[in-house]
Length: 208
Image (cartoon, rainbow, N blue to C red):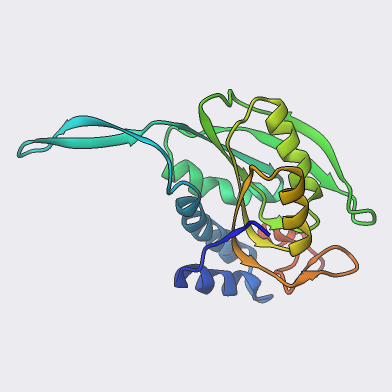
């Protein structure tokens, strides 16, 4: 399986708090933002840069700027919890949205919304917190490829082997960056040990 696990101690620390069933929505949202910062840094560590002179208060030196645009595409709704960190890291960020809804019985994703900016000469960061079966991720990647995306990085909080394998098989060119590769899926296609339904925990819409 091709997947990059970010093993920084802070990632492990934050992920543990996200897993904790006692973590309330407001705290969960803050933790998701913090973790996304760390994952995004890993996902963009090899971005090309261009050099140019910059004048400091003391002298002129060599400076750098990004040579490729960044496009963030959260999968609605859970992916929205990862977007704020990207807008802070990349002020010139372009943002698109893909709406996919998973049938909890069949685990098949259904598209209901898509709005994308130009994707040429850009690295597309697909924000999808839970890579479970991989069906939603694969459908989103197909949408992006058809729209002209040439470089895609799938950023997730937790991944299951089943989803990683599917994405590897269908789109081997897509990098996967995650905080954890978990054990697998249960009969309801939820990741184990996982952290529950990311969207429900983000917005407080789960069962009480």
